[in-house]
View 1 (cartoon, rainbow, N blue to C red):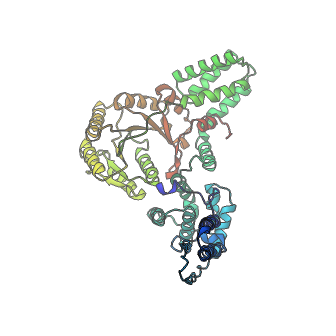
View 2: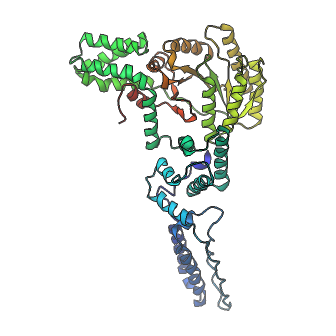
View 3: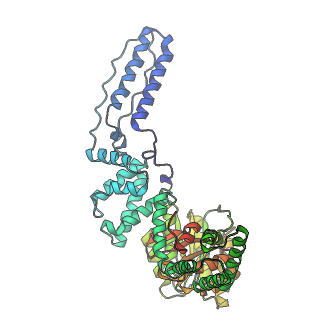
Length: 502
């Protein structure tokens, strides 16, 4: 949401209302000094004009944070110098300032005293809030005004969130508090803020608990059971990696690299090897940067076999785009699976995205063609095209996917800009076969790994990344909208190896 990108003066040391008034007072006094060459009568007017800002600045600081619709009266501009023959005119008395809201004064003070992070600010404004009622909307509105959000855009954010609560039938704060923080973190572009990173790492550790139990604990046992890097140690490490669904080829390549680095560094003990292992695991996930700029609308083609969570992943990606202020269209080109179109339409309604379909059994390429027309004419920022859950063994379905790609490319140069393969982490080694087939036939350039919270096979992420050199951009750690999180190689590597956050 673009209006949040220029905020946070209220919390990050920007000029307060008192400081702004003082600056104005100094400007007026400077103008008075400049007019010192004028007749004496002319000097009186600037002095009188300077009195008014002082009167305004005597009001409590919190008035500067009052609702946008109850703004303090602006200070009168400095009067022009009077001529020697001019007759002084009595200056009208300024209207009294509106009374300050004691609750908002207290909120303003508490927000300024809180740690400058989103969770702390929310703790202040959500104090004593238990459900989605008038108190919640009043407090949330105050927070947005304190962040200098334009009134119309703040109202749009609140109305959008209120509508989502109604559609999801959420009432109590405990049901939606984390969702509210997630929305604000995206809108404020604060996902990299330390507090949000802590939340993500905690969720990542919880999601990888079963994988860590097998892989991380096995690693600890391996390292504690040996005092030297013997051949037996390396053999056990290879077996451990393969059992974690990392795959034979990636395992042998990783262990070979570890041996070489340990030898070059003179490392002879397992304890000395651990930092090298962390670095190598993290390096597997790093891929070259690519140009992200596109000619709008950005076209995202979603592919993957049935049952991997592709539909809900589309909804979560579209939801993130909506929270970033983008106009979103979802196209249902999966026209063969029973209820696929209806399911995607329900998700589109829930998240507030627009939707296009031609119903069941329609030609998928025709759906994509019409959706591209709608996206181009409607000024959309991004379009997600769902495709059928093609079994990677069905060449005719792969041919159909190729046809969809050709259609969107003819309609919009450079499209599709991203082709995302959704993989279910619970499938283990089958994920490698799927990735190979889709990469070879569909031009896949991005991976989303789902269901990491329910598997002990999270090591497949290492296998996919190392074998195909495709970036993993998001990981699924649960069912909620907020559970699709950006992939961080460093944090994932540490969580996978059973290490805590640094």
